[in-house]
Length: 436
Ligand code: HEC
Ligand code: HEC
Ligand code: HEC
Ligand code: HEC
Ligand code: HEC
Ligand code: HEC
Ligand code: HEC
Image 1 (cartoon, helix red, strand yellow):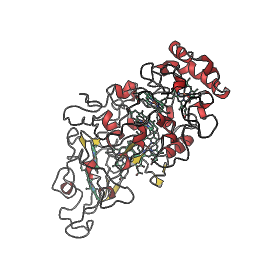
Image 2 (tube, helix red, strand yellow):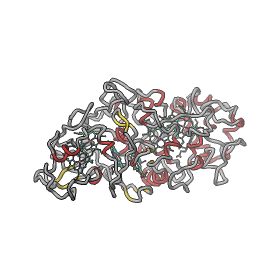
Image 3 (cartoon, rainbow, N blue to C red):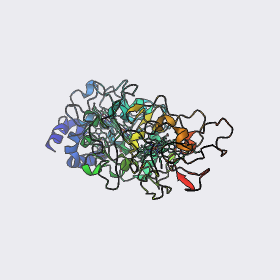
Image 4 (cartoon, rainbow, N blue to C red):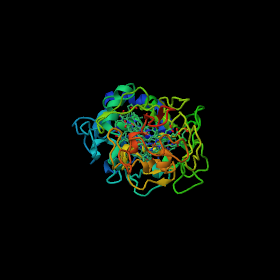
């Protein structure tokens, strides 16, 4: 509190000029949250917000005014609000330009991009933010170096759709003028996990349904704390003895926020989520339903258990009934591959971009590049035997699935995607198999 007020008071004249509708919430905010603000990445007096602008030189590092300005401008050289009037929440530029429906984004499309970009950041000294594969798994080669660059890759979390979805689903904290990044981050609380990769109390996340708190900072919010599941952390890049995050010797997810609970705040069994990029509603993700016979709706990579598994490699080693984390396979912001698939998975790099499409698989699909990071790449043996696991199909390939002889490969995503089940070609039991 005290520290918070010291920061707020270092230029009182300017602060009091903040326009009236903002000022009431402003003081409410300082009472409630000054402590967590000064401990946040933005509020830090050593590494917090500091804009590169002579008009702001008198405001100390971490001061609110590096983001909030009276009338949207303190006569500096910074961008003016595109609307010509004060930007919502009195931030120095418009929160989100709703004209930005698809990437490629410009910095002026999102307030946060003005600082969180590798090229031309307004933050004094710049900011480097790499992707998840680099920060937590240690694979830095070819990582985007800023959040702006991360969202401008082949696949990405479409910011227009996020805003649209959050506005209706989380309307108590997310308004029509809110910033889409704020659906997943609270700019007044987010910490610097990248500087403390093995310590999730420095989490950057807030669940959209619990915007006023951090997610992952408490020990009850980690991958190991859900009593109904067992998580195996993936290997750290290039290692066979250390794990994510950051090359630790712990492999039970105790240092990893429960990303499943985080992502399923939106991607659950009930929410209908439209994707402008994919031009369809997304598959609903059922990560938690138990199967028993292995053929119910729940994904086997989630709480549901593999039927027989002899094909997973180190560190999974054929163990069944493990629950993976969404971020074992996905990036949160964007990726050169389809569907936000990571560049590095389980200690190894995908040897090319993973291209796949749930609705129209093509012969150029490369989904197996992902699967082989955790499963033995004996695709013929896995499906037709002889091989580990429980081969579902006839060894002689007498069914007509592959068409002609020699057999033409079938794109993996015809049968493997979230929620997928396939009817059995040859064997009678089980008649239906759950294939994800
Ligand atoms: C005035 C510049 C500025 C703006 C605008 C800004 N940030 Fe930041 N942000 C920073 C700085 C500086 C850090 C600390 C950088 C570091 O750790 O190297 C930071 C850190 C963060 C972190 C913690 C992870 C990290 O990089 O250490 C998150 C999350 C974050 N910002 C999200 C946002 C979001 C979301 C927005 C928009 C609502 C935003 N920021 C707008 C300057 C800014
Ligand atoms: C769908 C949720 C979601 C959205 C939307 C989102 N992020 Fe993130 N963000 C994440 C997750 C998950 C992480 C990685 C989690 C972790 O660090 O534990 C992350 C990490 C970050 C980091 C830290 C990166 C580092 O260096 O470690 C920053 C900074 C950040 N996000 C900024 C932004 C900005 C700016 C936007 C909007 C342009 C945005 N995020 C949109 C979920 C999201
Ligand atoms: C990194 C930039 C940044 C900094 C620094 C920052 N804010 Fe904010 N603030 C935002 C953004 C962005 C929003 C709008 C949130 C949204 O889009 O829903 C916001 C919203 C607010 C709101 C409206 C209610 C809410 O929480 O959404 C208040 C009040 C506020 N800020 C006060 C402050 C105060 C006081 C400080 C300093 C102690 C501060 N802010 C520092 C970016 C920042
Ligand atoms: C084993 C790796 C893996 C894990 C773990 C994983 N995913 Fe996926 N996810 C994929 C693949 C592969 C695709 C693309 C499949 C395809 O071609 O449709 C995908 C696609 C998606 C899609 C797009 C669905 C659509 O409509 O096409 C969403 C949303 C998604 N995942 C969310 C999640 C969430 C949320 C979690 C955690 C609860 C998660 N994923 C865990 C591999 C994974
Ligand atoms: C990050 C590691 C990882 C990746 C990547 C991965 N898997 Fe798995 N997979 C596992 C683990 C671990 C299990 C066992 C889960 C359990 O028993 O709960 C499993 C189980 C399965 C099963 C269930 C097998 C059975 O006998 O019921 C199928 C099918 C499967 N994976 C297919 C795939 C496909 C297809 C891909 C690529 C799109 C893929 N997996 C990518 C780790 C992974
Ligand atoms: C605030 C709600 C929200 C949260 C939280 C969220 N998502 Fe999404 N996600 C969306 C929306 C909206 C879309 C549709 C827009 C799009 O396709 O980019 C989407 C799309 C996706 C897609 C498909 C992207 C594509 O176009 O290929 C994947 C994969 C995905 N999300 C994974 C995740 C993962 C992993 C997490 C957790 C780190 C997560 N999401 C958290 C709202 C959310
Ligand atoms: C015609 C449908 C079909 C196609 C195409 C297909 N699979 Fe499968 N796959 C299955 C079925 C059915 C299973 C058995 C699931 C079970 O055990 O219940 C399976 C099992 C698997 C398993 C899990 C093995 C285990 O028991 O651990 C992996 C990994 C896998 N497939 C990868 C792939 C890859 C990679 C491709 C593309 C090269 C592919 N599949 C193409 C239907 C298919």
